[in-house]
Structures are given as C-alpha cells and as structure tokens.
Image (cartoon, rainbow, N blue to C red; front, side):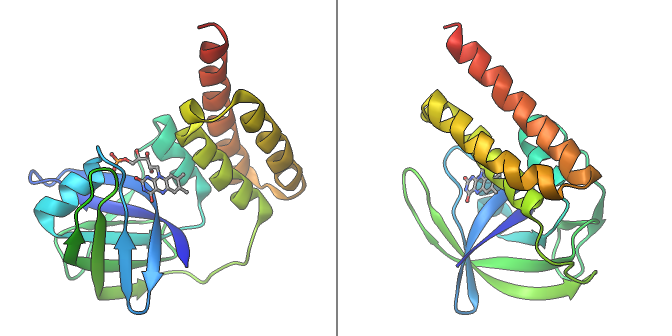
Length: 188
Ligand SMILES: Cc1cc2nc3c(=O)[nH]c(=O)nc-3n(C[C@H](O)[C@H](O)[C@H](O)COP(=O)(O)O)c2cc1C
C-alpha cells in the first residue's frame, strides 16, 4: 500500500525540509522513493533519519508545491529532526538499507518512535481532489493539456460538494499554479 504523507528531513546545518511523498508500506518497513534530484534524498542520505507525517491539512501538500512552505514545526522526540505541528500522527524513522537507482532510489526505513496527536476525522473527497490536483501539478510538464483539464474537471465534482476552508485555499493554490503553467505552455 502507498500512503500519501509529508516527509520532514534536515540538512547538516539543521535546516528543515518538507516534501509530500507517497511512501510504500511493506510489512513493518517503510520505503521512501524520491525522484532525483531531491533535497529529501540528499538530507536522508546524510542524516539517515526522517519523520513521516500523517496529516489531513491538504494546504501543506499543496503548499509545498506552490511556495507556501512555512508551516509550524516541533522537535522530534527520539531523533534529531522535526515533525509538523499539524500532523495527526508522526513516525520517526531511520534508514536501514538503500537500493540505488539513477532515477528513483529506494530508501528502506524502520520505525524508531511513533506518536498519535489527534484522532483521524474520516475521509473527505475534497482532500482527495486536492492531493490528485497537486500530483497533476508536479507532472504538468509531462502530461497532455487535455488530460490535465479533463482530470481537473472530474476532481472538481467531489471538491465542490465537500470542501471546507482549508481545502478551498489549497485547491486555489494548486489550480492557479496549474493554470499558470498551462498558459505558459500554450504561448510557447
Ligand atoms: C501526494 C504527493 C505525493 C508525492 N510523492 C512523491 C514521491 O513519492 N517521490 C517524489 O520524488 N516526489 C513525490 N511527489 C512530488 C514531490 O513532493 C515534489 O516534487 C518535491 O519537490 C520533491 O522534491 P524534494 O525532495 O527536492 O523536495 C509527490 C507529490 C504529491 C503532491
């Protein structure tokens, strides 16, 4: 199974970095798969630790891809790192093995410490729509314009019916960024 999470890492100067990543869950191991080049990958290879944040505030997913990166962070408990203050839960992990790859290395991690902060509030279709739109934004240069437009149209159905203020803000960031890139592509 793949879980959509926010990975927090730190560089050697202690500067925190946030990135949405779909992590693979395999028995009691997690596999983080960053595409090169990646700050998350560089930080993970140097520090050997990371935090997996389980978060339902989709503004953070959207924000990482649209320049809104300044989210409150708190110190991790068992590793040198940070977690998102908005996380429902977080998991502090350590790399146990790396499978090298020129495009997308696999970083196998084991849990050092796990903390539950808030209860899971149930599924929300607008959150799904924002995540899918954010993925479209991260691939906008590799997909045909018609596909992006038709997927956004479909995603807007669940979004319109179920969004709250956080989802509306996140949707606005992502769809504006997609529109900007599509306009540029149309004028090339
Ligand atoms: C829901 C979601 C899941 C993502 N999963 C991955 C992933 O597994 N690997 C990856 O390299 N990028 C993934 N991305 C895109 C990255 O978050 C984004 O490109 C980011 O800039 C990664 O590069 P960085 O480590 O340099 O920050 C995902 C984006 C979203 C919105």
